[in-house]
Image 1 (cartoon, rainbow, N blue to C red):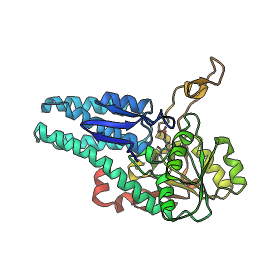
Image 2 (spheres, rainbow, N blue to C red):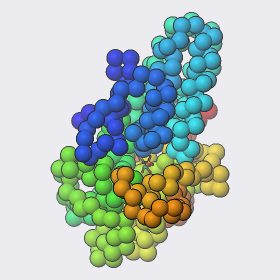
Image 3 (cartoon, helix red, strand yellow):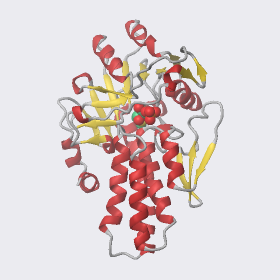
Length: 350
Ligand code: MRU
């Protein structure tokens, strides 16, 4: 399977997710501005993937510089531009902070050494994403049993990461382990990441699934078809509040009502220990995403719209959070995970 994002021949290659599932189109980004635009218009999307894209955007900016003065100016400009692309996903800010530490900590290095270290850090972030997703998959797979129906929302798969995925990583590992289950993928209006991307991935891997529209969730739960819900996350607060694609909160409430476990799979880079639920910034996207479907108008001209891209699910509705360090259950104090994560994670939260 092609990687969602890859550093190739000194350029960044991404799969154009707006073209899927009809066309598998690759976009070559030669500068950070092109990557910033790709994040904004969601040619690349999903929290871990946009974190990697931001890191690689910094690496592209570094590549073009020839002096240390130029590096300092250009890297700050790239950092600010990439930070402004989307406001909610923690991984974007996490990756940019991690990249910034390189050029702030290594002021004595030559320009060439600094450039090399910046590019290597971006590549490391991309490589770690793959191993972290596989660890999440291993840690969560045992939560899935033979005969389960598993509902997932949006796309928390390979396309939302470098490869493999978080929520779909758990599903992939359980499937590879030979477990027999069926996935219910909700289409995820307005941009249909479930219908276009999750269905694409599940079909590619031969994992049995049914696509449902968002308003069918209560019905399939009531019918007893859903035994577990597994979703990804864009941001998790210290106490386990989960910010994820709009509709996630509704699914968590429904799952609670029907006594169905509700799991969240995410890397530690999605957790922000300093973030209170009140300070979460929920992205508002263009009205045309709601008034149109794939370019076709479905609402009267001039219709006013509300289009929040994410919602917040309180920790008491979340049965467990699956990370690369294991499965944590309420009451959540996720700072414990960071302490257990050792040096690598301490470096991330410093
Ligand atoms: O607006 P998107 O498509 O970037 O939103 C993506 C999601 O909400 C995903 O569920 C989340 O990023 C988890 S991805 C592993």
